[in-house]
Image (cartoon, rainbow, N blue to C red):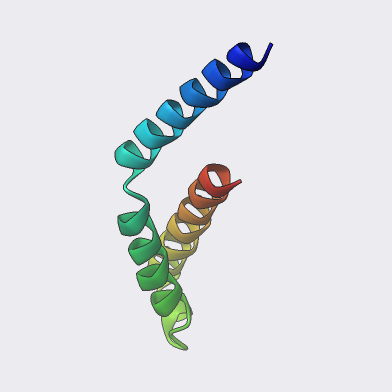
Length: 70
């Protein structure tokens, strides 16, 4: 039973490492920081299409990060 658990843990670790490489977590965090800065611009809603794009991208990026970090 312990061997099975170790094997499962090893497989999950490998999967997580692969996911982190594909997502580039550091780049995702940097993107979130940039989008948060844009979203805090008091003039953001002067251009509604830009505001919607920024808030949508921010929400999507934050969701991806939450899924990875659990």
